[in-house]
Image (cartoon, rainbow over all chains, first blue to last red):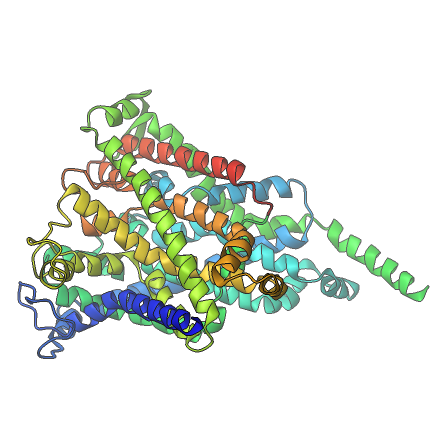
Length: 276
Length: 308
């Protein structure tokens, strides 16, 4: 009886894993397929003849690495700035008493209930008024601005857990809030900041809508998701190209996740999000 | 005696620094300015725009009352109601299936010793794959011809139908594809949160259950599920809000075909605003969506009464 249950459990897990992996296997297989304009019939997991033509075309004709650079630059700058500014705010919310703190924090929390994209129209108008449509500055500014509330909330939880005794020890030595922030809070919260950095990084890397609306038709500034979507639109059936570009986009994501296995359990954080 | 003196001293000292609450301004201000400019102000502005007509060239807003809402409810051939219905259907179909499968997988992974990390990573892969990429792979899987892997499976392998299904260009074919993609992409997230919750349960509960002679299923029903209720609650809210967030699935898979029958609110918002330049109508859709989400959250908060 116990054995049967064990076998069933493993069968379920393995079957599920295969189903979950299948789309990826198909994507990888088809990226090495010699594609004409029709799909292989019957569909196959692995190509009959391996070819790197799709990858060559995506690099040489579609200049995928230029867009890769755009995505990397925008993601990198956004992540660093938004986390620094959010950490400053989070410190004040966690450790400095000031008037109106509770109310302001509730407002920050409230915005998290509204899906970000619903403000996209006024945000677009604002960036337009600032004359930043079709610029990287505009896009990065919008990413940072929309990321503040959520990231502040996320970090505050960790900053609050830092014992006040540690902070008082700096106070005894005559240190200011800036010293505490720099010498105690930031180093101690490194794991939290690391986790958040990954989340911001991936969110920015994968964003489609904001980038599409702000960058518009600025060909040389486009990011990877927009380019992939466009290749798809141009050649509705040239999946080989689309999949090759997708794989190049996915590789850094996979690397970031593999390196940061230890940050993998986001569970506690997500739960904490509701405990208020 | 001595310790209390020290404590008193540090307390006073810390009061000194805590009294420097003006410093909070310097810490808060950069974030606050950005939040006001890009979140709080747009939220209010969005309400104004939804009652106005926006001219993109002059940048002028003209108050038009309820015109935008009227246009949504009448002119656009019921596209709005179909989109709204599709969001609700997505919530009703995707949320429970995702929760159920996520829990089953989490329980299974939790009970094995070997390869648990491997399975965790595999089931989490879809979560970290961008919607655009996931959408494109599913577009290939649901290809309407016999070359589409899913049609091939249904017709030639399982013999469920004799003719390939036109997945992406029919009302229900399209909606089902969108749901399946949503479930596939969300399960890993539910699995991960459930796994964390299950691992946080005190082992002694299970020991007591074992002494009482509970079977595996009874343990799941009477110990695990009640104790992970807060996670279920959190996930339910997340998934329900997420179902108002559906957009890229539709953009990549069906493009709203046939004639808006697979469209959702955000897709309608996007096309009305950035394809037809009807900013007012877009903002009106945004406002209705935001109100819907608030109502859902408030009801759930009341109904589920979880102490958290």
